[in-house]
Amino acid sequence: ARGKVEALDIGWFADLLSDPEKPEQAEKAVIAASAAPVAPAHTGKGFPADLDAELEIISLTYRELKAGQGRLMARGTAGNLHTTLSSTKLGGGTVEARIDVTMVKNEPHTKWSAQGQSLPLEPILLALRPPGGAQFIGSLTFNTTGAGQGSGETFKRTLTGMASFDVT
Image (tube, rainbow, N blue to C red; front, side, top):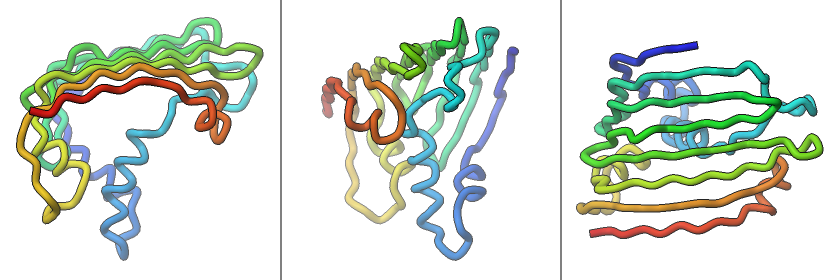
């Protein structure tokens, strides 16, 4: 399957998942959705072997944070999932990532790597938290790799990894 996002403001996603009586839930919903670990359904079969999806990203916006000119690819092979976010503009910098989930004895084993360069702190922090808090101005460069096994609590207990951040 192939797709293309010409322009999309994803603020509606947060509103959709939040309780209208609790507006602070909108931010938590987007953060939770973006931080959720990738894991196969609990069918014991892993991912579909014929998954082949590619999404071209022209422009995404959440609050003041803009992303674009990138590509998200997901491939399912023999019950495994390989997902790649090619070099994509985020704010004034770039970010790229890879997540691989392989099935070993019907248990998902997840590995990831990601890096970002020259990412502007102010719009990223504004997208992750409500306005009015402490402000940071500068640029962020990061690199992370890691792995985990299983899903749910097992995944959390087996997480290992490394992350480095440079803020200038």
